[in-house]
Image (cartoon, rainbow, N blue to C red):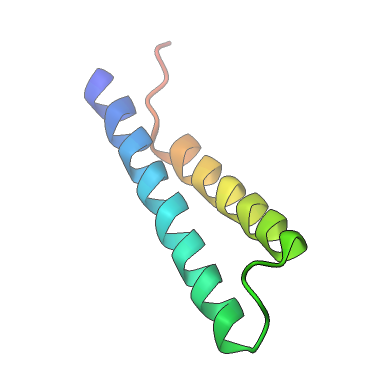
Amino acid sequence: MEFGNFLAAVTAVAVFISTGTVIALSVGYIGQSPENPLIRLIGLFICFVLASMVYNLIKVDKS
């Protein structure tokens, strides 16, 4: 069970980083500044939600 939770955490971190990279590249491609604080907050929120969803889908319950 511990390996499943470890795998879930590693996968969630990978999803967080890759989603952040895709959002940063997309924002730069459409002509906006990635240094805009509002875009950064929205991007971090999206990354957090997706990473949480992936973690909860993979994790193993102890019951």
